[in-house]
Image (tube, rainbow, N blue to C red):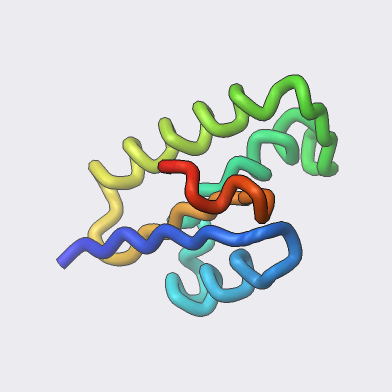
Length: 90
């Protein structure tokens, strides 16, 4: 059975750490995170560009769609929220 876990929280609260524990060692490619967009943008180094946050979320959503088609077990979707935007729909 497929499982989709959606982890939400402010930066630094441990979403990535928990995600890695849930998917298990060697399955980190099953984690979708908008931060990955900024790592790819910086060729492996984190390159934050706030004007591209919409693109980062589009990237993450497309990765989730792709993973839902091919992942057989656990998929994680990490979202970074500011405390004042926690009620916003994903």
